[in-house]
Image 1: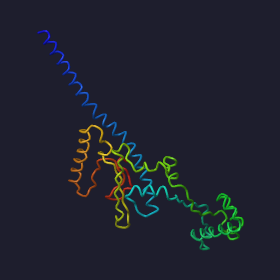
Image 2 (image 1 turned 90 degrees about the vertical axis):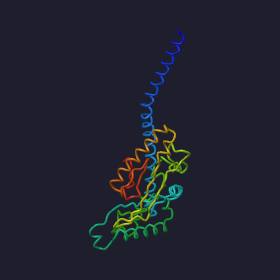
Image 3 (image 1 turned 180 degrees about the vertical axis):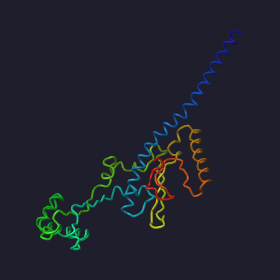
Image 4 (image 1 turned 120 degrees about the vertical axis):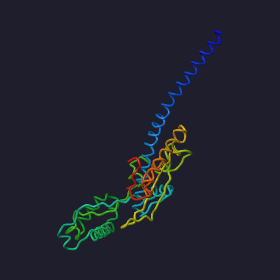
Length: 266
């Protein structure tokens, strides 16, 4: 009889411990899920902002977006960053003489070629030194354009945009979702034909779905998270069928209209 009581006591104690464990686990699991989600999304958001920098630069150069991340990386590796450098501004007198930014740029360019033609060794000096020489030696510039400089400067695209964060060897990382399943790439959707009432406005959306970067966490918590977004969308679209649905994940940009390629966390 005593043995039976001892066994029952042990079983009751074990059951109590198990129930206690389940209670604690039911509290800790959602907390751990949210903490891990926040940690991963911080890295994903950082990567998306880097992609936003890249696609915006691509659009400046090409006039449209690309939906191919390999093409985007090729662009970053093989296209120099071009920037217009301006020194000096038009005076009222120069404008009266019908001088324009374009005419000045052409005059300076011609003067530089003439100087380099006569003095090939100057090609090795800095642009500042070359311009000083041009200002001193060319009569037209000496009389009217001293102090003016107009140049298109070229620099390494990756270094200029990211300041050492990426190199040509590591820039391929930009395509991949941090913590992504099986090296998943970001999804890219483009609408280069979108037009407002007054102007063409190409659109892009780059995204990572919850299933891509939370796949290895608690399955029920993941299902609950996605269900929550779907229910919110049902309510949202019931009020406005043309509203943009919430995205079940992290993204920048939109295909519903221009939003400066903002992130859905911003």
